Length: 82
Image 1 (cartoon, rainbow, N blue to C red):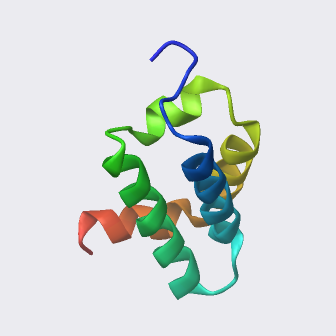
Image 2 (tube, helix red, strand yellow):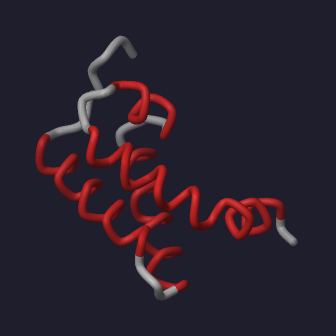
């Protein structure tokens, strides 16, 4: 996708709110938010890479980067099945 992500405004707002929850101190809340955000993107046939590269939602990008910085080790083991 070249700069635009095909995500309706309502769903983009929801994605932004879910990404805000990625900085929660509660493990379960973070995991649920990540799953719901990924499900939302999947429903629109979008990938995280497409959303982050689109540049149209800097709040999402910043919040996702903060979350990834805080949780990269935990995230890796969660998806590797360890």
